[in-house]
Image (cartoon, rainbow, N blue to C red; front, top):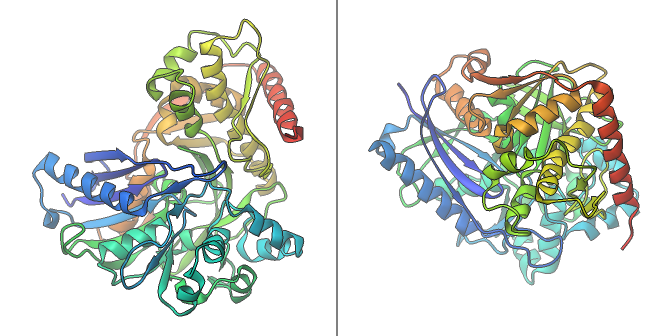
Length: 495
């Protein structure tokens, strides 16, 4: 069987996963990398550490099976979206650390454009909110704050890329500067209706067009690896942002199908086919992929803090030693005892879009214990997802009868059952929860001829455990009402 490698470069770790033609995982390796928080609300990564993580996990995967580079038929890339890198075209070195999608350091630039009355104009072109979450303000921040960088950018010496572009540049030895439609649509610089980099958007953010990558279909030939980074001669045939890759990996290829990925953040996407659906509730319209000349759109809601809240329990509070403990600890109590946790560490995403909100606990009493805190943190992930689910159905004017789920936290049965009870719909977990990687492999294999059609790709992934509502809607409505009060209090709090 042909072997397809997926590089899944996430927000907190890098994975390399090798698949066969029927979607089985042959080998995998994962490596966490450093999170930098130089100032409150800032989040940065070391671009070189990311590259080293890719090299290390790639070699680990090959060594597990005694393979060589020429045993890999094709390669796909999926990545944390919006995270921004600028680098020198000659040296190949980044001019500043990668500014992560979670980072709020460019918020003042968004405020400036909003004060100029450009918010709706930007949304009408990009389908996105004017928010520091996306790439454009991060690029502008580097150009405005790092000495000498604007001059280099305007003279054509610099290149911009989201993480996929950074990896592609290095994999091909600097020969290919490109991205795909899904990643381009997350920059606030790409017109998702005209399908091009937009001159007005570039002017508003004061960004020179010379730094931008070529935009290619998500399933197509991107280039070939050169020696010095990975092995030479591996064909790169697929790229997609992590959430769009997960949508594809879940087999959500038809309109109205929806999935939610539980990772560092939470991301719910509904396939809307060839029609972009505009939201009245703070969701965003994005490109899912472009394949065979056809663009597929999606409606998306983003939760900024999900799995990272559990990491905070471990690293910040020391309440757990490993994230896998949370299900057992939370199961020690029958509920959170009235405790609500709003994990607004970097503001609130959809449908609230409040950049100033910060995290808070509510309902603490002397009887609150460790298990209640852990359970409240888990439940906060489900509550935030429910916020998005409800407004997504309203925007699309249709009911979602099944929610497909994946991502690390979806392996937590307590969380998935609570999610199912809140939504009152069936929740189906993927057999292999890291469907972002599978999606990238499918996109690469489709272009390389491993699979004959999009439909054939959708049949590769197997479904796992199904969850059916157990609690009555009346009970869950009461719990959800308490959550909404906690969010309202968080937004209204002024430090």
